[in-house]
Length: 87
Image (cartoon, rainbow, N blue to C red; front, side, top):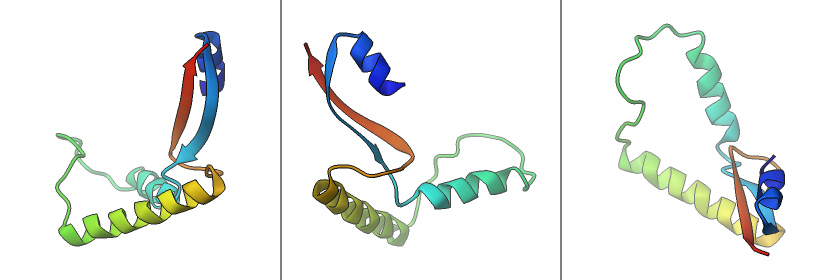
């Protein structure tokens, strides 16, 4: 769908890949588990995280970036990254 949208808007696609691959399955489990746990919905789900967890995520994304550069893309992930230029 993203490729079609870029093409229809007079853009030449240079690169399309998934990103955020390493956290795909933990996020999927967390989202599915929310369906089984009754919670009151209030406020934002944006919360401050510990420095240890932040360091762990930084290490995960550093490794993902390395693999991204080596293989020029990732086979699956939470988000799409597209690079295009005007024709």
